Each structure stands twice: as C-alpha cells, then as structure tokens.
Amino acid sequence: MPTGRRSAGAVYVVLMGLAVLFVGPFFWLVLAALKTRDEWAAVPTRILPRAAQWENFVHALTDINFPAYAVNSLFLSTLYATLITASSAAVGFGFARLRGRGKQGLFLVLVSTMMLPQILTLLPTYVLFAKLGLVNTYWPWVLWGAAASPYLIFLFRQFFAAIPRELEDAAIIDGCGWGRIFAGIFLPLSRPVLLTSFLLSFTWTWGDYIAPALLLDVDHTTLSVAITAWYRDPHGNAIPTVQAAAAALYVLPSLLIFLFAQRYFIRSVVASGVKG
Image (tube, rainbow, N blue to C red; front, top):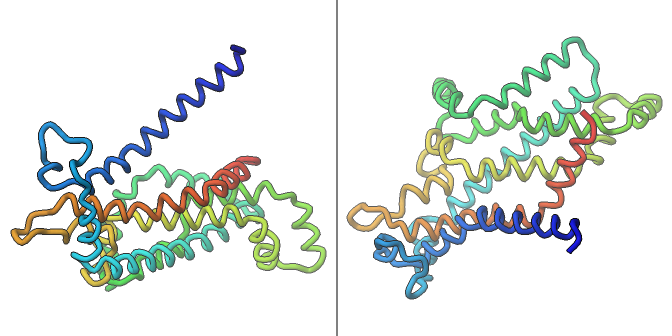
C-alpha cells in the first residue's frame, strides 16, 4: 500500500476515534434518559436499558413548563447574540482599518483579557448589577452584548484586516464615510464571520447556567436552570432519568446548529487567519 494511502487511513482512524470520544457522552445521555431509575442506579452499570422508557421524555416536557423556559432561553440567547455580534464587528473594524496612536497596545491588552476565566469576574459583576437594580431582569445580557467580546473582536479584526485596502480607498474617493464603508462594504463581505459570531454567542448563552442562576428569578430563568432544579419526585428527590431526557432535548438545538452551520465556522476561521 502506498505511503500516502497509509497516512490517510491513519488520519481517518484518528478522526473516527475522536468523533466517538466527543459524541459518546451525548449517546450516553440518551441511554440514561431511556432507563428506569433502578437501572440508572444499578451497580455494575447497565449500558442498555431492558425496555426504552420513552415516557421520560414526556415527563421532561410536561412536569415543568418546558416551553416557557425554552422561550426564555431562546429570547435571551438571540438578544445577546445579536448585540454582541454587532458591537464586536464594529470594534473589530476599528482595530483593523482605523488609524490611531496606541492602537496595537490597546489591542494586545484586549486580547490578553481572553486569558481571564469568566468566573473571576462573575461575583463583582453580580454585586454591580445588584447595586444598579438590574437583578431579575435581562439588562445584564444587554450590557454584556453591547460591550462586545474580546474573542469575537479578534475574529472580526483578523477578517477585516485581510480585505484589500483598494476597496476602502475607492469608497473614500467616492465620498463615503467610515460608517458607510463599514455597513455597506465590510459587513456584506463578512457574512460567514457574522453568522459564526452569532451562532457561537447564541450557544454560549443557551448553555450558560451560572449567570441565569445568579441573576434571574423563577419566572425569568432559563431552561438550563430549570432542568437542574425542578424535576423532583413527591419526596423532593431529583429524578435523574427525566433530567437526562430534558438535558438531551436541551442539547439537541446546539448539535443541529453545528451540523448545519459547520461550513460557515470553517470558512470564517480560514478567512480570519489569512492575514495577521
């Protein structure tokens, strides 16, 4: 067998192994959702259920107000994703195309903030929002979205920096201002990055548990908090199989988003890495 084919075969084997590694937890979650409580707690662990308990999914949808919490998550994720994509694109454009003293140093400071774990700023942020009276509202996500994201700014900055300067010069000669150049030329060209930014920030908020648990009350909270808190039996004990069913339904939108939008992720990452 030629060396090239052997190398390609080895690569495929490694990729298949990684695929199983990453997809395995989701399949394990689905299997847990199809078990009885006794099978779930059995020692040694049973991999397959004796009979699929599809009613666990029915309980997941009916034991709590699943649609209402899903709407809360959808609204909050869409609001945050829209705002942070717009603000990050504007800041990324400024770093890529505008001239100013100290721009490179400021950009390095901005990028360095990506190394700070979010958990470090969560408590001071909560205290700040509590003093401003914004707890139990969606205003924190509005402010976070308007403040942009260092990672998304970096993504947009790299993409905008790779666009030929001749387009910008021609627009300036025609009398366009920077706002019109940004909205009329750069944004239409950056649709893959815009979609990637929106989907990434949407899934960040959709999957977030800590911030909604701290900042929102029972009526306004998201599906992630509801799943962990309110599937209980009459004795107040958690029902892990129903929680697993609800979690499988909760994860499904993120998986579908990635499957249908993966080409845009790849295209935006490749385009953003063309020029530093």
